Structure formats: C-alpha cells, structure tokens
Image 1 (cartoon, helix red, strand yellow):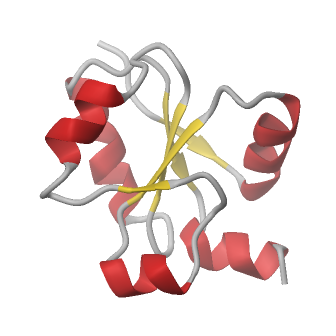
Image 2 (tube, helix red, strand yellow):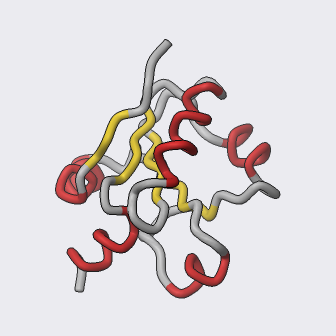
Length: 102
C-alpha cells in the first residue's frame, strides 16, 4: 500500500509549471477558499467528496491543501485509501503558498 508524500511550495510551483496534469484539492472552509485559493484548485468538502473522487483521475498527481499543512496529511492518507496513486500533502498549506506569492 502506498502512502502520501510531502510537497514543498517550491516543488508545487515546479510541478505546476512543468505540467497541467496536477489536481489540487483545498480542504479549508468555504469562506477561506472563497477569500483565496491556488488557481485551478477544487474546494473539497464532505458534501462533494464522492463527486470529486468519481470525477478525478486516479493516476494523476493529487495535491491536498489545508491551512498550514497539518490537516491535509489526514486527508491525503484518506485519498490514498480511496485508490489515488500519487497523493501529496502541501507542507505549510495555503498560508505558506500565499506568503510565497505575496
């Protein structure tokens, strides 16, 4: 059984610059997501998780984003259990991403 990997902000920047074949899900609350999120990310909630999983490409890299990179680890582990092959937890979360893009 595979496990999720940690991904730095720089690694995500390079990953998205090199390819459009990266899926990003943001598990923060709706207000935080609406206030700002990584371009192209999908807001993943308990209400839409079944739909997101059904629509996602299980073989394409999937990056999970939360506030600080802690909650995303549990969500990444869950998504591995659902059959995704290449799952990452973004270290530092959206807070680090926005600081790097300020």
